[in-house]
Length: 457
Image (spheres, rainbow, N blue to C red):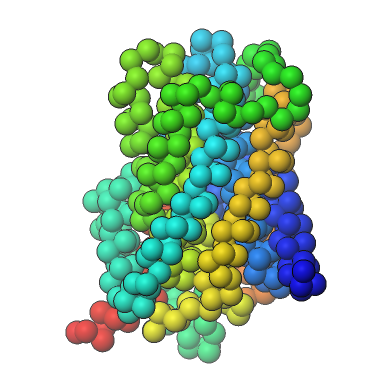
């Protein structure tokens, strides 16, 4: 074999393993949003100069691993592990009240691993089918971004309010760009980071205000009840196809296939809609709960994989909520990866990896995440949940990410932009449901669609 290829595979495997371990651990911490964790760490990996294959496996293995372990706090503690775990919470709570949270957890994690192995080849296949239309889509990218921004805003919690908020949000971005341009400074990462950490920035400003700090005070320590763990298999690595029954496997595969073919809809919306579809087809209450949980957590995996891979392979443009949010560093991380706002030309993983490499490294990423996260979640979930709830300081985790963001902002020189975008985005998200996915599409609307509109008129 080619020594260079062997080295490339070794780097990809090593970075994938690091990503799987890091995000398997992060997934155990409740409330760790994908955008505020996956995006900054992937951006750091890009800026450190890691080869393209290593960047890709780090992100994808991390995403797959996190969407397995986010089931642990969701099922055992009754707290969503991240944003995409929120639609799983109600059914998981019902199973917790029935005294079988361990069953909920096993169904969720098994659904995720089955869906992940199906989603990668299907997403690559759909991307290859769309690739011949890449040049046409690149030319119409400004209008696609505008339409996608409106569509994603409509399917967010804010609905019409979110669509209306796109206008002032885009104007603020244009104003900041004009301000920095006066000093011959062109920023991109700072906007991306500011949007990603918006809720965190909003919370930090809230704590500094007396009225806000008063509303966040707690008079007692939050309590959780953990049911005893019951292991129903021998060995370390249980077979997910035996954990799921035939009906659950069939529905998990079906919903994963559907979500692997879509890449412009909100991942949360896909999780809710496909979960409702599955639930409407099953009459028995207990079987309905476990099947819906299996399918929904499978959808969280498949949607994330498809929404990152299809735009990346087919177009090189971040034309999905995931691509514009957590996966944005794979597309646009100057000076290494760029998307030209004027022409739609790209220089990123789309140009640096072939279709076969995306498939091979994608399957490697899923395999590494499965080896790390699946047996860990199945065998040690209760002990891990107890350790995190008792010993891990959320303040320490927040401080770690604040430090990382300050380092990156000083590197590009955009701390003011990060604070402005973060505060505005965080408050809009909390108040109006104008979430980070819509905000990222607003950013790309500002840099791509607005110049095209100005030329048109």
